[in-house]
Image (tube, rainbow, N blue to C red; front, side, top):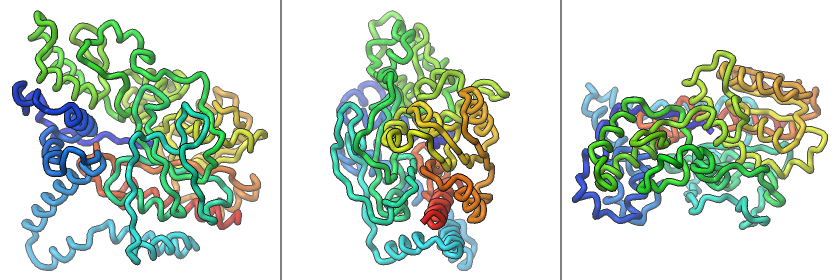
Length: 480
């Protein structure tokens, strides 16, 4: 859901500078594709190639990102240790803040009766850590173009009780993150899905939920599945050597005008030739993949517009427009949102169960992707309690709620700390309980594009996962 753009100051060397044509053209196609993917995630070409050389040609992307992250962390650790003035400081460094944070949260949740956290922590202490691998292709439990699940799954007994819950986060995380998320959420296996099977942009996400997986169906009409179908006017200018048919993950930042100008200048040097040299193509395609640039003229590229992002992400036109929302806010909001068609496919199993409406507790779901998905499925929204810190996002959801003439009640909470046992008990008594608890947590500390604070679930932003778990556990206790 959340995909905060990383600091790009360190990415001052591009493929064009690092690899002349006569050197790079000998790389295999598979290695080249992995290089493009890693560069698109925010790593430098030098780091990506070093990781592929060290780990081997058959290494999965998730393991390559772990290698790069570990190498960077080791460098930072060496610098910090060299700068420590005495033994006491070295001792303090060996106990980072994230351990203190986890310990504090454990005591906090245990005090509130959160038995699940203790159970999960004991498993970790006993050394039963398991590694969760990212599947390829990333189609989840069901192929949206088929009518039956490709797997069977058995939920733990504790996860079968209502309410339904649904948690999303970025798929490619530091090693061990999804294992930890799974432990906290009843040891349910994640369902990894790339939204490229639903729309014209990739969005690799993991979902842990207790929803049924039979009888799913996609939203209709189906959205465009290629760039040329989604943005047809770009086809006129699309060069034959740009083989992209889909866009990369939608980010919270767009490519700069200076970058577009550098690309134009690089291409115009070879205007008299049938096509530019291979090293120029590689440089241009790497930047186009990284920033989702499309062709808008001869030798001219530009980032996709917010209204095009809305369409790709499954939102109605102008969903994020108006109300004092600037383009920068729109990029951020859309980059941090659900891909509606993907989420609606998972939620479609609820349509027959809740023909008269559904009560939803929406946690950190941004601009209302969950609400839009349920509305597009034709499931009435009786009561929605939306917990979202961003005022911009709350304004967008409130505006959509009014424009679509929702008959139910929208209750907005800005601070997750206000979601206490007493308040949840009040809502359960008022509504008769929650049917669905849906949301995610920011992936700023998990995403490969974040080069500054990719520290895992104990990071400042991604630690909101523990709030998701806390609230789910409280709701289950109150309703159970």
